[in-house]
Amino acid sequence: MREQKLITTKVAGNDDNKKLMLEYYLTEKKSEETEEVIYGISVTKQSDEGIESDVVDNISYKKEKVLDLLHILSENTVTPICLAEVLDDLITERMYS
Image (cartoon, rainbow, N blue to C red; front, side):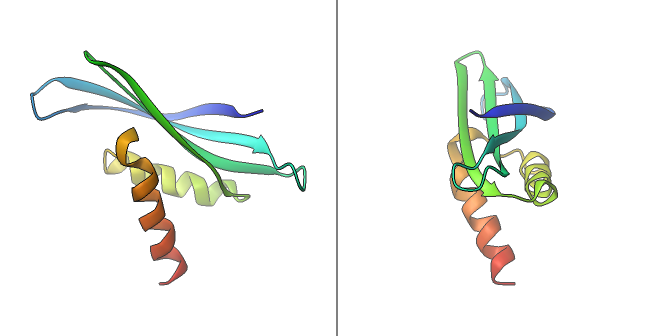
């Protein structure tokens, strides 16, 4: 079972100058194979148009690495719609640099 911990929130404007509330969560769940805790990230966007969210589980067993990624996402106002793609780019960049 996945648990979520709210790490940070951010208020931003969209192209129509409407405010968005973004929430960035650290997710935790036990690995089925090892029973160790594995971490992921969830992002939720709330606006007048409704709520969107996306989650990427199983990023790393190292909490600090996932928290670093989460802060980069927040600083760059990453929304749920592009969460997986941006995370893929960030992880790939870190692996090959």
